[in-house]
Image (cartoon, rainbow, N blue to C red; front, side):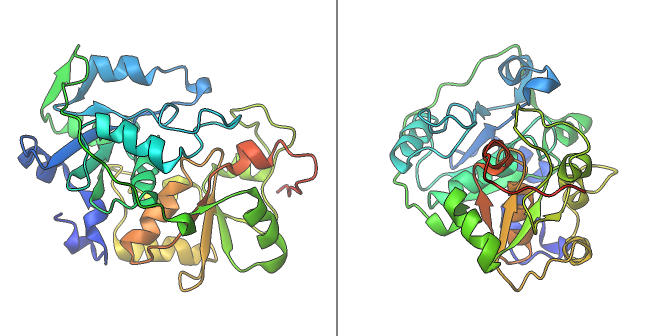
Length: 292
């Protein structure tokens, strides 16, 4: 997908804006707009999609494609619910999914990528640089328009449980320490110096977790993913040995998927994500937290 020159071992996890523009009319490609905003951001993803989206893109709302019975935000749906909802978006097992978001690559594009992988779909890529880069380059968009008509397809899921962790897994890892833990939240939230965007009982981080704020993975100038050498350096500086198991966490399981994507590009395909993340852990009386 024209990212091999970045030195990635799995470059197919990203596509460039030029590649996507050349495939806008490709019936084997379905573009998804995974834009998501926290309540404190006071932005509306559905309104912004209607105002402007990449030509042919279908909205993918992580709060809708989720487990509606959970009290936690955008938890993974069942394989059956996921299959039903993406099938209605025109996605079958033979479709190449390309996902982007309005924040670049961090509001939910990596989360959607991870969701497809967890349900057995490997033909999924993130648009490098997201909508901001696409717009800067003046590429094709639709304005003041709703979702395009899609022909429903059959999507058969294949669940990969090793890519997700639940509360019991993280509790067990506190003592076993079998998996290194990274936290993708901004450093002040990791340290407990600033409040969380959602109500929680406590602040700080899971004991033993290491901070890797999600911006460390991106080039500051144009918002694209750093090259392989730079990603390796970022993990090393955080104290992470990519040769050992890795578990990623954040506020609610969204930006936690960015370290998973970065590691995947480097050839490490089995990085797991703690789905409940701090939205769950930070609201439990008996879950230990560290500050600083």
